[in-house]
Length: 411
Image (cartoon, rainbow, N blue to C red; front, side, top):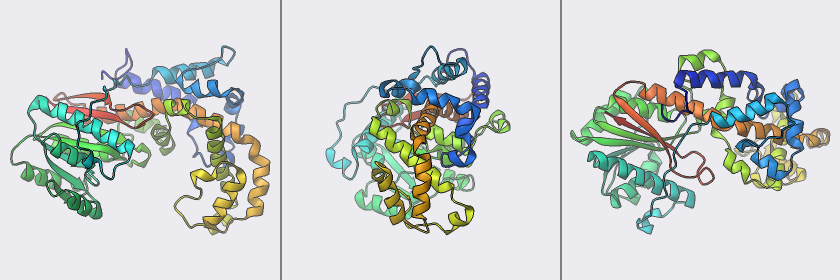
C-alpha cells in the first residue's frame, strides 16, 4: 500500500497501531457522554490531562499537529509522535478551475459545491484515461454530482438512491438523468448487478459514491468487484461509527479494540479544524460535552422518565454559558430536574478544561483511527492482484474533513 507510512505493509501497520491503542484505550473505552459516570477522568492515565489544560490557546491547538513540551512524560511524547507518524500519506488534488454553469449549483451550499466540483473533476480525469462514458452513482441523493457529470462533462449517468422522495425530486429537477430507487446491501447485490448491466448495454463504466456513509463504501467495493463492466470506482467514505461491518480484517476483529467509540473518533474533528478553534469555541465544546455527562449521572429511573422533544437535546448555539444549556435542555425535553442539574453543574463546572483536554488527545488519535479504517477497507476491497488503488485528498481538511477519495481500477 503506497499510502502507508514508509517501511510498513498492511500487517505491520495494523499491529503497530494496535500496540498504540492498547496503551491508550482509556481515550475510547467509554462514550464521551460517560466520562463522569465511568470515572475515567479520575484514572491514573488522566493525569496527562492537567498538562494539556495548562497550555495557552496557541499551543493547545497545535498539540494534534505534534506540539509537545520537553518536560512532558516520555509516554505522552511518544503517543503524540506516533499519532503524527502513523497517519496515512495522502496526496492532495490541485483545486480544479470550475467551468460549470452556475445554474447547476442551485440548491447546493458552498461546501457541497466544492465537493461536487472536486469529485466530478476526478471522475472526468479518471474516466478519460479509459474511454469511459457511463457513470453509476450510488447513494446519489438529489443528483447534484450527476447533473454536473452529465451537463458539463457529457457522461450518461445512472443514479441509485434508496430514498424514494429524493429520487422523485431528482427526476423533477433533471429529466435527462436516469434514476432508480434501490438500496445497496449484501442481500440486493446480485439484483443490482443485473439492473446495472441492463442499463450499461455492455459498455464499461465508473462506479462513484460521494460521502458513502457507514457500510456503503464496503458495499460499493463488493459491487465493484462483482461488476465485470466496472473499470473503476471512486468512493469517499465517511461516518465510520455508523458501520455494522467494521472492522473487516481478522487481526482487527480479534483485537477487540476497534469499537464504535474509536470509529466515532475517526469520523470526528481533525487536527486542522482543531487548530482553528477559538477559546470561546473550546469552552462551548467542553461545556456541551460536560452538560451531557451530567445528565448521564441521573439515576436510571430518572433517565427513563426523560423524554426528548427534539432530535438533539441542545442546540449548538446554546452552549455559550451554562444557563443557556440548562434552559435549552428544559425546553427540548420533559422529565428533567432543573434543581438537580444546577447542583451537579456547580460540582463539576471546573472539569470543562479537563474535558476539552481529553478531547484534544482524541483529536490526536483521529488521524490514526481514520487511517486504520481506510487501510482496513482497502485491504478488504483490493487485496486481490487484479486491482490497483490510490488515495487522493479532494479538498483541505477544514473545508471538508472527510474528502479522501478511494480510486480503484480493475487491471
